[in-house]
Structures are given as C-alpha cells and as structure tokens.
Image (cartoon, rainbow, N blue to C red):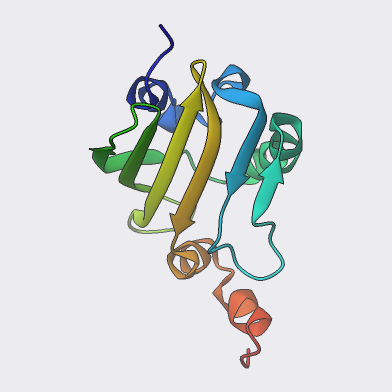
Length: 142
C-alpha cells in the first residue's frame, strides 16, 4: 500500500531545505496562485519545478523551520489540507519572521502529484527586504 498524503507530508525535511527529489512525482503539478507579479504560478513536472526552486533555496539566507502545523484530513486519503507557518531569523534581523501558508496536497504512489500552496507574499517580501519591489510591481509608488 502506498503512503497516505499525511505520511508523505510528514517526510518533508522542513529545517533542512528542499524535500528529497523522490517525494515529487515526475509529472507533479505545483501551483502558487498568490505568487507576486512576475513570479511563476504553476510548474508542470518535477524537473521544471526543481530547476526554479533549487537556486532560490540556495540563495535563501536562513534555514526555515515549520511551526503551528494543522493537518485537515479529507474524504480522500490521497488528499490533505495543511496549515502551517514557515519562518526563521534572517541575517541582520533582531527577531524571527513567520509567514502563514495553506497547502492542498495530493499524492499518488507515495509521491506528491499535486501541490497547491497559498502564501502571504506581503509578509515574505517585508522579511526579505523586497517589499518596495513588490509594491512597485503592483503599480504603486516606491
């Protein structure tokens, strides 16, 4: 029997960076509908996603941790909805920054087949010092 969505999600190494490549199905679809303007909102295929995500994770100046996890089971054991916060202390910051996330996760044969993630781009932009760029991308003044 294949791993359930919860079991697959529990294998994600939140404090160690990117999940193992084997956790993503070859044909995974990853969606981030709330991504800021200019950022991709959909990837089709593991390699397409990893080609985008690897360099960004390497550039991230802090190790992320996950907290306040709530897992919502669904009628389908291959699907869960998860709420969590990711955060940590960025270089030069006096305190930790935490951003809320919600994700809908579907697994197939023990791998993530579909991941739809909702995040707060304002919190992330403020924490990374890119809030002025985000505001400008929305048509606001810098």
